[in-house]
Amino acid sequence: AARRRVAIVLARYGASRAAPEGIDSSAFASACLLDSYEVVADLIGVSSGIAGPGSVADMLWPGALHLPTDITVPTMAEQLSEVADELVVVPADLPDLPGLVLAKLFKVLHRTDIAIAPEQGGDGCAAIGVSLPLADWIPHDAFDLDHNPFERLSAAAPGKNRCTLAP
Image (tube, rainbow, N blue to C red; front, top):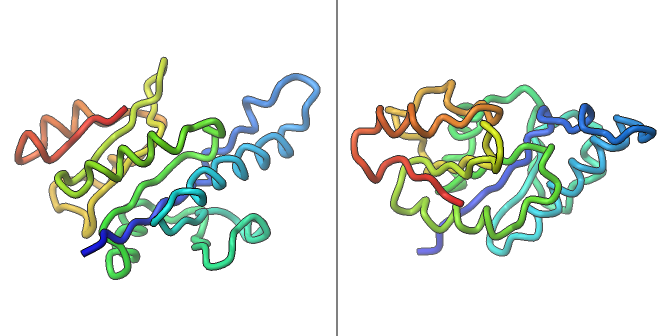
C-alpha cells in the first residue's frame, strides 16, 4: 500500500532575524516562509501545510493543511496519525532547502521511527521526520529544530535502526 505522507512548515521558526540590511524583516520572513512552503507543496505524493497564524492561509494551496502556530510536533503527530503514516516538519527559515533532502527523509521513514536531516554548519535541523503513530520512546522535547537531537535520541533508541541521520 502507498505510504500516506505529510510535510508541515513550522512558521514559528521565522527568518526575520536573518533579513539583510535595508530589507523589511517581516516581509523577508514571509518570503522565506512562502519559499519553504512551496518546497514541501511541490513534493509528489505528499500532503503539505503550514503550522502558523491565520495570515498564512493566503499562501496555502487548495487542500493544504493549516495548523495552529503553537501546535507541538507530538500533538501534530497524534492528530495526523489517522490520515498519515509519515510526517516531516521543516522550519520556515530554510527557504533554499532542496526538496531532495525531504524526499530522502521520507525514503527512510518506512524502516525507522525518526529521521533527522541536520543543518549544515550549525547545531540545528533542516528537517525531522517521524513514522506515525509516534513511537513511545521518542521524548516530546526532541523536536526543537534549533538543536539536533540525534546523539541523544540514538543513545535512547531501543534499536540501532530506530533513529536515523539523513543528509
